[in-house]
Image (tube, rainbow, N blue to C red; front, side):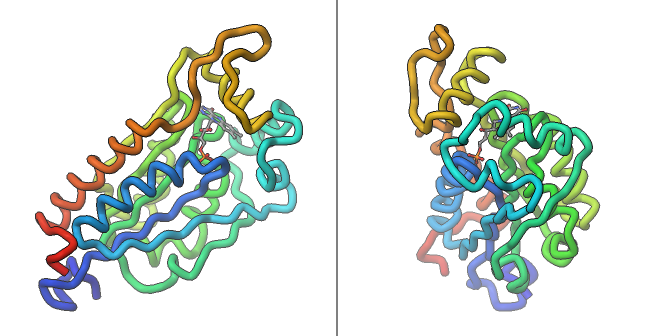
Length: 233
Ligand SMILES: Cc1cc2nc3c(=O)[nH]c(=O)nc-3n(C[C@H](O)[C@H](O)[C@H](O)COP(=O)(O)O)c2cc1C
């Protein structure tokens, strides 16, 4: 039983779980902001970072910066296009009882949900977690958020999840400049002004976007759990 179904009394803290994959920490950064807002509203927040351990596909994502940025990025393109899944590991939090809200943190890989999160949402662990449970989606990408969100919603709905809300975050710049800026960062681990002779826009999640995640989470908590703060628990 959870706070939402009244099983532990009106003052029980709503339980919120964040399930996500994050290679360079951008998705984790946005979710940290949201987690803080949920905690300030008296929620009990749990996190479950998915580990990508697939023998065929995970190797380029086991280190940062990437060794060879373009081949490493393209290594998952055909598999992403096929909607393939791979081996992952999840922490006990995904198996530890019921939650009042599940937040899915979803970076875009090749215009759709990343293989690690897709693998979780198609695993046997997803339905017990999501069935009848409200879920929210946090999409983090350079530009392409829509098909990622659609894929996550389809998979989460199939597991019986009840869509509550979504938010997406992108990086500045047009298609080519933002791609070069991200590739420069992924390949060097540094923020550079120029790459291949071109001026680069900033890449990755900004402090302002973390603030947007906080505001989004605060509104969602108020809507789902009623107005409360950390002292209501
Ligand atoms: C293999 C790979 C493919 C990507 N493909 C896309 C894409 O098609 N569209 C896009 O907007 N961003 C794309 N990105 C950028 C990521 O969405 C962005 O770097 C992500 O938000 C990083 O989040 P993370 O650090 O939490 O993993 C790609 C990144 C990687 C590593």
